[in-house]
Image 1 (tube, rainbow, N blue to C red):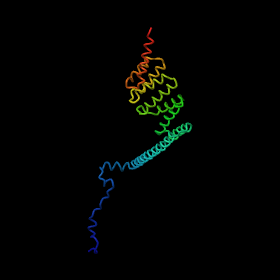
Image 2 (image 1 turned 180 degrees about the horizontal axis):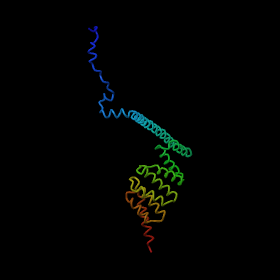
Image 3 (image 1 turned 60 degrees about the vertical axis):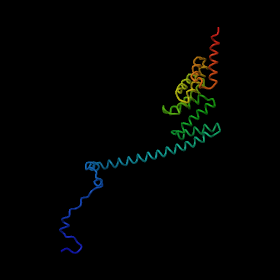
Image 4 (image 1 turned 60 degrees about the horizontal axis):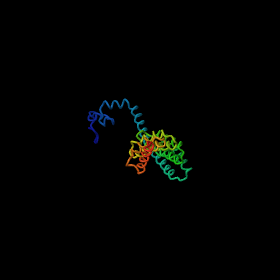
Length: 229
């Protein structure tokens, strides 16, 4: 007889040990998948670590770029409100150097072009606007504005053919159509091509300002006068 509180020896011998089940088996994964994971455990661990590194790198980069954009936007706001004509361009240039890949840097380059245009420094304005175009995608909503500004700058610099090219690029853009035709009409007048000038003004027609109608009449009167024997 066994002492009280103990199991019979024969019962102990008859009980089969409970087989050990791994976590993978507890998850009821297919046997083939379990075998694959065990055979490639080290590679999978390295892959998991690499994946985690990529995720954290992405999060860090996103936070970094957002911080850069915020800081650049603050600098741009300060530069745009600066009234000193000497300090303002310096602030814009510094912003571009410090935060070159931000949206604020693009707008700073645009503003530098505007500043140069207002100062009648058309060559510098053109360089700034061309720099901006080089950074824009073909579908950028900023592109029509830059083409219009380039047209104005080339026109101010007396380079009429280049101006016509850039004005021509925005004829079909809503909000720029009339301005483009009026500018092209003005240039054709400067070139002495009254026929083309009238054609451009006519495209604006009655929807344009009153002076356009008067301009067409004067061109017609001039044409009639020149045809009078």
